[in-house]
Image (cartoon, rainbow, N blue to C red; front, side):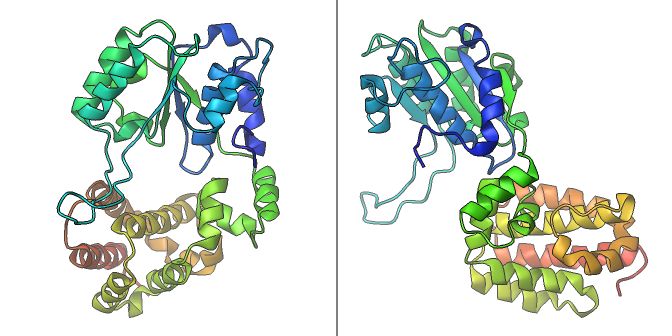
Length: 338
């Protein structure tokens, strides 16, 4: 797929955004669930800004000097502000940990870039991805640039969780939501990628096609299936054994909590509204447990708190044991688990 092409479900949003190109803001905030292709959308918009064809209409031409520079990954008027990969070794020869935040030094380097005169005589474009990864100091430094943007500076912020951004940053951007695609369109695209049972993987990921594509090929699929099987049978759930099993599998805590959150969402949703979103393949098990859904709302809040701490250096096995014991307790408080 050409890196300047949109995904099939993005054409309507693209046409809406470029309906009046002259009114595009200097700062745009793209929002939506992970796995919708927001970064691809942002990259195409950056290429459009940098395209040097006068009659480029609603798409970058892909062949002008500006497009060739951009596609080669070394356009002098483009920057990507993102957490560093952290690959390689430090000065002591130890493996560097992956950086998960954008820090103030990263933003200061960006400030130097946007203050420069354009090399190609056009816009200077920055993508911030994901925007919520800026820590407080970085966000405040970035805000100063947004408040007084240099002439020709364009900012495209991409956010999976836009409410985590400073309200002052949000207020200086035009918020442009990218909605989930039509299930039929997404399913056809996934089938074209060779995915078996695309509807099921779309359900597992809440309708996000790129996340569904990853879900279909993930090495941890058997681990998740085993985990959901244990949740389906709370009467026989051996918390210590399950926690040890997951610890050996080396699954990230954030992912385990996400699986739990989706399970609880479906349990509550089925109990209160008769609807399953994420795990239709576990309909019978969820239906059996649904009468106890009323006792799970408080547990859902605990999972949300645990998600915020998922990347902290805590003992993952102990955290998981605690969450599973609380799961059983929540079921019991609503009438006992079968």
